[in-house]
Image (cartoon, rainbow, N blue to C red; front, side):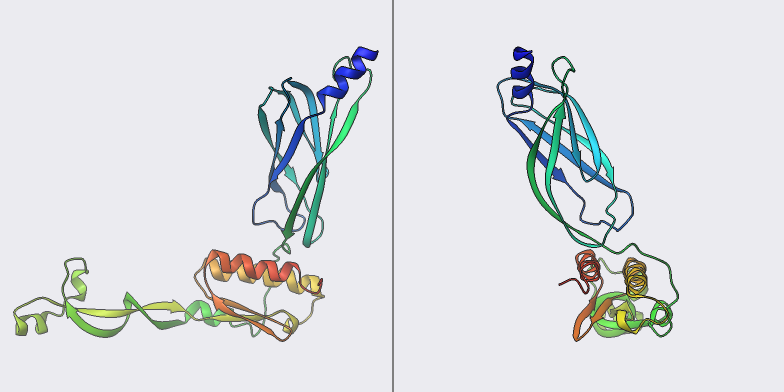
Length: 248
């Protein structure tokens, strides 16, 4: 019994735990999280289970100075900032008389976005934005003509200005502006007929739908205005603002 106690105690010592969490997490939806265990001892560890975020990952063998990872499905029940402080590590090794456990610090903070919910929003500009186009100062192939320049060899033939080229005895091309979808600014507090959680879920749906179809989207929260943009980091920023809305 004494030897079993010593071996069991050593088995769960000298371990480190870490989580790899995606940057896009939604309330109540399945999220794939990777649990990593590392063994810093000169002895291997056996029959370990790591319990974190309400789910369990099993590690049958951790070699000395080695590490393993396991993917688990986690659901976060609430939106906003969530602090994952520790992981509970347990093992019945060596003879399954007792299950010994310890806690390892993780200290990982995640931001859980509202779960997107499809919704019709009157006056949000979404339908107009889907059909409207704005010209931008960026060089493109579909907008209005900005200027005439020399042919460089890479422009489409449809842009060649044949009449002007004949006059100058050199190929000239039309430079067109790019086209951009009409910007949309969502005002969460102006959505009608829902509670605040419903409004946030609707706004999250609109942000994802519009930006993924190249509509610049901005957000009005109280007295703050986040200007419209269309990149993935901007989309995650908007979702993050919705996640912590009314929580600070």
